Image (cartoon, rainbow, N blue to C red):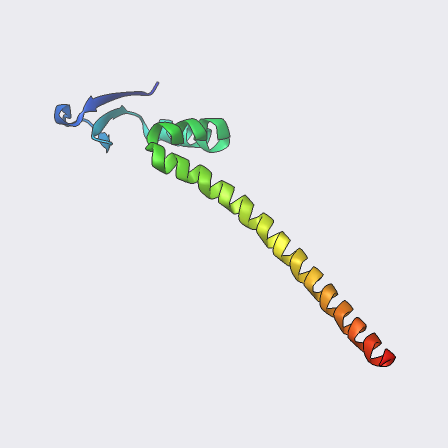
Length: 106
């Protein structure tokens, strides 16, 4: 079983540890346990979200969500621009046809 403890950085000792946001995480993990944990996180999107939420400050966590939303919005805008370009070509073609028709009636 894996255990970890969050301690203020000044209470850190010689055990393997990782500093996150001025807290020391003292870890008792085997390499296999770490690989298993990573594999589980990778395979479970809900768990990924929980880990991101726990590890990232609010600004960085929200930035991930904003980038995803922005990506969707940009894709939608690209489609709209393509549709507008096609409509513009149709309008230009129609104007040319009207100009030719007007020349014939003059």
